[in-house]
Length: 339
Ligand code: SAH
Image (tube, rainbow, N blue to C red):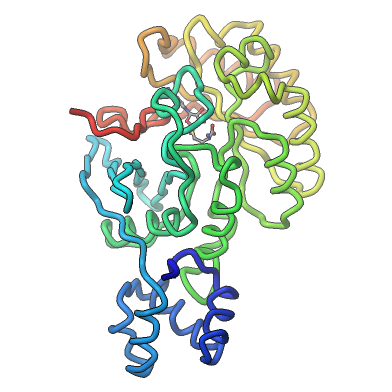
């Protein structure tokens, strides 16, 4: 049986035609699933009983179970979700006064092993299917009882190493016939995979791009993020120039400030050199100390780094992490249940 949540509208139309039905049935089904959130063919009352039965024999829905929910003092919610094969992923809901953001996962674990990130420490298990990505969104919208405004691929995993499924999920959630979430409400966050960045530029999909930079000197970045050994800063920069030339979009950079590691004047100079000539916005994030060797600079040091960057002519903001008390902040997501 096919997993219906892995099909985009065109694929579902093809499936309908192949099974002897009219293609517009796909639109009706898409509306039931993504606009009305009905996950049961028998409840799709504008379809004939015969068709409802047929659908039940052709397709299944992915099952994903919420096994734990933690709520932070700042209102951030973290969901531990169990997949059909018992793997676990975490997904985070960030609530602001006027909008809600879901921080969703693209893989079970992550292969990139960034030294400051808890997800990498437990290794890579597998890619999530498009349906598992879509289901995270639908499940959490149902859980919180309101539609999401923004989706960021900043949970577990590297989205550009699971590109096909990430794009398929975006296409499904963006489709105006179904969930109809605006394309600019999706952000892909990458550790810096140049081919992925170039393909995003070529795709014509106006998804936002965020790059986890953390250092603009190759030696340091390679020690923090091993992916930099394969894709050093000049290759990253070339891909970003290509992306910006093609899309005109501003690029967001994440810079987790770590005491004594990437917070010196020299680090700032490198950062300014790297950003020169790009339309950028830098999020300065006091690192979440998932390991004792990574400490946060003092508030004053963080403010001074940010001020100097502004003085050099770059837009930036200090992002105080949300949900740290429940390990829901950047780099704190794991695939194992804590005992
Ligand atoms: N692989 C993607 C998306 C997942 S990580 C990427 O690298 O962008 C989401 C964000 O959390 C990234 O910017 C990552 O660098 C950041 N992050 C990881 N560990 C962190 C930590 N301990 N403190 C602050 N940010 C962290």
